[in-house]
Amino acid sequence: MAKQAITFAPAGLSKKERKELEEYLKSLSGPQAEDDAAATGIVDPLPTLHRKLPTLPSFWTLPLRRPFHRATGFQIAAANPFAAADIHDPAGPIIGIEMMSGGGAFTFDPWTLYSSGLVSSPNLLIEGSLRQGKSFWIKRLVALLVEVGHYAINTSDSKGEHGVVAQALGGDVFELGAYGSDIRINPLEKPERRNGETVDAYQSRVKAGRNAVLQQIATLLNPGERAVTAREASLLDWAVDEVVRKTDDRPVIRDVWQELSPENIVQAQGGNHYEKRDADDLWDGLRRLVEGDLGEMFDVHSSVTLRPDCPYTVIDTSAISQRGSGALSVAQAVSNAWVQNTISNKSSGRRYFVIREEGWRDMKSVAALEAHQEQLKLSGEYGISMVLIVHEGGDFDAVGAEGSKERELAKSLLRGYANRVCFNQPQSALNNAVKDGTYTTAEAAAIGGLQRGQFLIKMRNRSYVVDGNPTTTPWEREVFNTDRQMVKQEEDAA
Image (cartoon, rainbow, N blue to C red):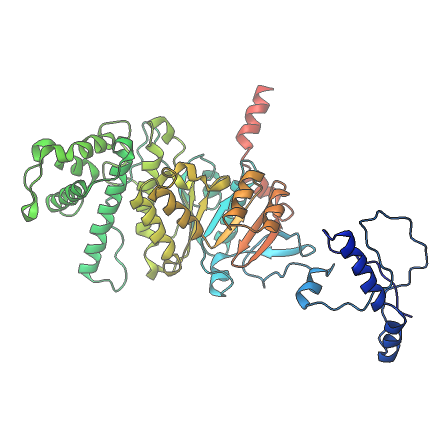
């Protein structure tokens, strides 16, 4: 006798369709079906249900004589109660416990994963709402990767949280922007010459880098953050060439600004004629870096050196906010250019973790966005892992107007981050992420249920739900505690 089981009919059937389905199932589980089962020797392993079922609503279809079931492997796998995440082989330090695998240790090293082909790039996007553990997790990851021989650079620590981590790891902290500080960074400084690079190639790279950073700075300082015109770009190029010639290739922004003064705008090299009004916005904008609210930071030669072998270098920009509007964006553009000179030397063999907190602040122009995009593309070649930290929804409101080229470039750039670490986000942001294909419905549901310190990490076509709390140590919780100052203030007030 065939065993019995309870089955559920598909939802949405009409009364007539349910009746037809019942008749069909009865025919499959009748005497003839039992004889077929006996002849083939197949015995249904499900237990027989002897107890009489209670009266059920009319929309339930519960035939008790269930025929032998036939399904695809995909359907059977979906019904497997023992399904678990398929965690990759150990690839770096343990960053948490994978919650869908029954407590398996989850390891993460972007370069190891990249070299093994498990991810398409080593770049990492970290997103989530405030106070969900993003800062704590990135500090811990930096400390773990430094312990296994990597290096890290934070191009703009806008909250002043990472200095204590750098000091604990034997790194450097440069507090930029405080009035009276003697820290200076020259964005026009020549980078290190690469092994095997010809003199002509080196000079061309230096010139292109100087022009690029000056155009980014000028755009941020122009009225309304207007992009530089072709005429203004040509003027900057001419001014830099003049300063290079006059200073034996040791240019600084102060000299470039003076070269652009109305009395110096005469005739540039190559027979190009300029009018004094062509440089008006450049003159007024760069003046802020020399004599204005952004002075004494970027206008002269560097007073500090970025050590290539420093475990963790932090550029602390927490004091920049007192310098006025746009100050942090300019500081990030300058520090990014300064750092680029170090990390682009691929012949060094070093692997850098380059962190950009509040990353959209320095990507308000097309030139800055394209520079970031180029850096992303070359990350594998340079041996760097770009880390961009944003709030929920990608912080798109900070980049251009809706429909602008800047906004579209930002969205394209965001998609270029192959690996995503997502902490809890509000449902509205998750709905948008599902709509644009960033996350699946299941991934969004998992993210919506995360607690502080838990995150979903998406790598290529796989995603994992990780709890980072159980693997932390008392030392880490003390040093990396983002809320330490807030707690101290509350205790002092009490």
